[in-house]
Length: 500
Image (cartoon, rainbow, N blue to C red; front, side):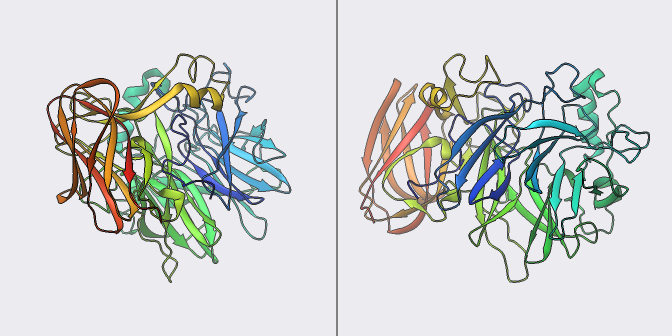
């Protein structure tokens, strides 16, 4: 690699959640929704595409805006938002499947290249031409996932299946906009598509159960909610989805792409729940999928920032396949796609924290979160960088005019980073702003293993503070724990050790 890969894997100013990873022509492409920093709802930006060579997962390229959806025949105003997409190659063309906000249908765009640009192609429809999702008796189509099997058969997966409590919240939030939206709890649907990639070849049938029909299925407590995605490894089919728990990506396995799926477990949680009994990061909805890269497997998902569910960043973790084809849940880390622990020397940005919590712990990312109490990953952006013109995305401007950091660390707050390969660690320094004098304890375990204590003075501009450190060599996590009065903003830390 040219440099180390970090997690989140894209630049700190970028917000691409719902990531669907694919390898095309020796490059890893990620297709997802596009949130806006400071946004007040999901998916406020047009689709962009990022890719990296499979030989260097630190070297990401932004291909810019690849599709705006303005020409979609269902986009009456030309301003409707586009939710989580999926992409598939078929006969040398690339098809992008997506849904518009408050839509019950699936739209399709097409391109000659995976990185676009994409042009509107049509809406998925029944054999009689009626749009799937709009015909009497159709279920709501949402978060489409598309998959081509080895024999060329194309399958489309879709569905939205909240709990009754969730459905009621959605209706109250949408108000009049909820009219015509059929919110059911039945589960996930699958169809085959004709060669035109638009026409239903088969009638929809249930694939994964929702809360209304999961009894005795083995999916209880982890029923399908949204985020359909299908993968195939070593002859086995993997249905990846977001469960009714919201924060977790689960999976089921089968010998077939359209039936007999058996629940197998959790792949990823953006609160690290399942790996930890209590949340270690501020959690909410999740969406992503699996990909194999040069014999290694990775799970892609997203995390939440800035006290909200509307500013999500893509994250990825190495995940290991067991001999029987199953996966164990991946732990949240700061090393992500790096494939190994980060070097125990050099400067690291604080926004790559994979553990972030107040003294009393982390909680769900929601409008009700107490911003006076909890820390958060946030940024400062110059006017016009990502808000004035959604169709313009200039990486150079965003890089130069965006500053990312952790805000509002108070007494007992923890920012944790996993993992580092420590060798001869001599000192740790931090770059911070603080309203009051305080200390930052540096530990290798949250409940002990202190290796440094950094005294911090009150300062209203970024200032560096340093302390000697002593830690055993080897793989270790690092936790920075705030002690004292006031509020601290945390921009970066530097490890001074022996380069190996």
